[in-house]
Amino acid sequence: MSDADRRILIRHYEILADCDELVHTSKNFEIVLRRYDEMLNELSFIASYEDAFGSEYLAQCGLRIETDGGSVADLWEKIRTNGATILNAAVDRCLDAEIDAALKLKTKSGQEKRMLSWVDKMQGVESVPVDTLKYLSTLPVLDALREPKVLATCRCGVRFRCRPHAYLGYIVICPKCGQRLRVDTSGKQG
Image (cartoon, rainbow, N blue to C red; front, side, top):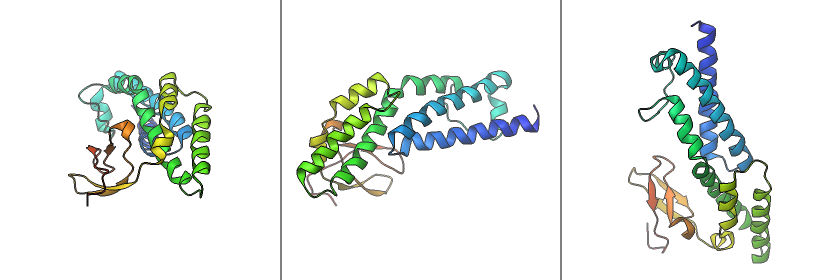
């Protein structure tokens, strides 16, 4: 393989990494949807190189893709199969961002209208998979609006503000290590 081919492969890897970052951090759901699809396309492209030249070649090019012992094609299948889980987590991030914006409004009715409008807007986004639309329709957004932000501490040592929701079992994800934490919302934590 030529240096030009290696550069092309590395560029696709960079795009993949960018997509992965946005899919797991963006609070703009339309961006998440586009980048999720693009992430699958990039993985497919890289999988074709792995199929043609082997996983050792990817490593020689400097590509470090965590596949849990499988191939890049296996990772593509896992991400495609778990798409609803990935997209629903993005919906939860977007919900929290919308709650923060709604709480800046002065009246309770204005806050509630904004949240209901957000649900309508989210359901109107093109190309939302059926499972994510179902998830959106079951979100208790008005209850979530009233849940407080609290300070959480992870075992990795990071402290962060979060809004644990009852509908998620008061589970949040540590922004540093990715660990799932059940958070006490009683106000007695430090």
